[in-house]
Amino acid sequence: MRILLTLLVKEFKQIFRNRLMLPIIFVIPVVQMILLTYAASLEMKGISMAVVDQDYSQASRLLVSRFEGSPFFEISLTTSDYQKAVRELTRDRVDVILHMPHEFEKRLYSEKETDLQLVVNAINATEAGLVNAYCTRILFDYNTQVRAEWFGLEGSGRQTTLEMIPRYWYNPLLDYKIYMFSGILVIIVTMIGMLLTALNLVREKEMGTTEQINVTPIRKYQFLMAKLIPFMIIALFELAFGLMIGRLLFGLPIEGSLGLLFLFTCIYLLVVLGIGLFLSTISNTQQQLMFLAFFFMITFILMSGVFTPAESMPLWAQKINLVNPVAYFMKVIRMILLKGSGFRDISREFFSLCFYAMVILTLAIANYRKTT
Amino acid sequence: MVDHEHIIEVKEMVKKFGSFRANDRLTFYVEKGEIFGFLGANGAGKTTAIRILCGLSYPTSGEIMVAGHDVYREREKIKRKIGYMSQKFSLYEDLTVSENIRLYAGIYGLGRNQIASREEQLLERLALSHIRNRLIREIPLGWKQKLAFSVAIFHQPAIVFLDEPTGGVDPITRRQFWEMIHDATEEGITVFVTTHYMDEAEYCDRVSIMVDGRIDALDTPAALKQQFESKNMNEVFLKLARR
Image (cartoon, rainbow over all chains, first blue to last red; front, side, top):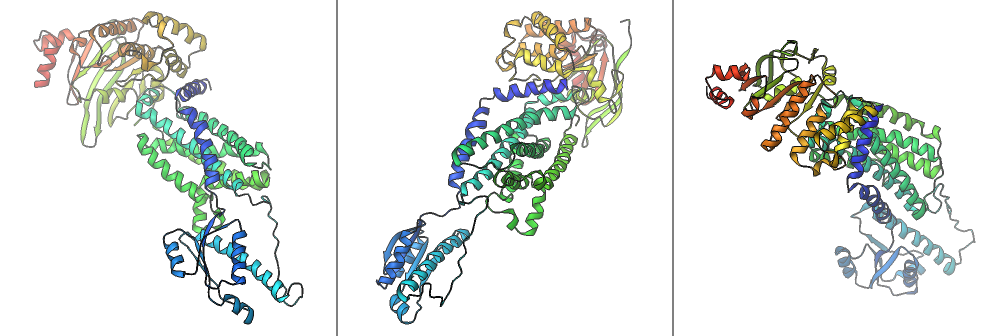
């Protein structure tokens, strides 16, 4: 115990003597939390629309005004030349073309139906889906209005429509930032913890001081724990710091128990820092380590469900996620913070990570060589 | 020498890297309390041998006992009884003089009071008290090496292994360094030292000279000079190397 304490004193002194450490702990995460939360938004605003109106009628103008009134659309071009609109689409200046052909209004009156063309740039399929959904919604409203005003069908019961009014639980205003922020917090805690731990051990290897350590009667677990504990504390601090920023800037809700969140984070950190230590036992230089660490981190993070829900991934991907610690944490942090889940709700994840931590730390200790 | 106890006993030690034999059937012993010089050109296999004796590297074969323990089975017991100063600097550059001393002393489990009083003595003897709070990276090479040696014997080991301890320092500091080595033997510490400065070989009680992984000569410096009809160890070494 005394030996571990001696080593911890050494590690903390070295960590805080590194001039880059304080910016890494304070500045970089804040910039990321603020920048990414605002930037990586899935909400669509300012969808650029080209209107091709070949009818110039009351009906067509009413439809256009509907789009103009929506916060999601910006009409950047109004023309009667369809080809011109297509050229704008090819140049990536508009996202969607609304095309109302000649006799749009006339057919609407005489035949009670009319044609309308919507051309959506679907290079980004998700985005295209959203644009389509917004457009459909506006057209539906337009349809209702036309039927009511011109044909007097409202409330007459001749053609009832079902309208669904959803209630959004846990995030009633569909504030996307809350969801995003919690995900980014996970990434920051993971990256800081894993990279700093792994780099620290490899740096000692490079400097040759591990040789001096290896010739002492120090136990392997003592040495590795002394490498792990400081960064675990830093990562936990990072979580607390992040929660504070989230609360102040984004009104991040904390529905569940903070104690539970921190307890879970401790176990989680044992796993990711253990992975960091393991990687550093198999690398000899910081460069090798960076490649390895980035491979694992990027895979873990992208598969964890930070942007897209892990539950909607293909089954094989979900199987892979069984060994992806980030996926567990991504899920649990949102459950605790946004839903207020208790220990029983997250117990499966909790015990899985406990087991994972035991395995990976055993591997790291076994793989660290005092004798080559 | 009254006490003839062998503190290091090596029989037929072999270390292979692939098909290359870095150590080829080394057989020698080191007596308790002596200064044993381990000489040889660069690449002769000195560092390989010293690393095996310290438990940093596995031998391929051979019987090796260090401080009464077997290097195959009892490496951790050996590590309690030895000190080691490597070619590369073993002190932490981003810790101060005092922090380095306390770190290594703490690792060997010395008590707080014991550390404090011995640190005081040590700094006084080295005349380094005034720079105790300076970072290692800020102090001159010669001081670092003296300090590294003192740290390596701070826990009063039975044997200290020095791997080219005086590389790159001026003659005066080298002289002082050897005075420290002699002081250590007064305290009963056995010194195992590798070097390729032949004048330093004269300070050793016995020297072995390695050529291409083998020990080609082993005796007191005086006996070796006589055997090879040489004025000094430098000549002995050149004659051996050209053979």
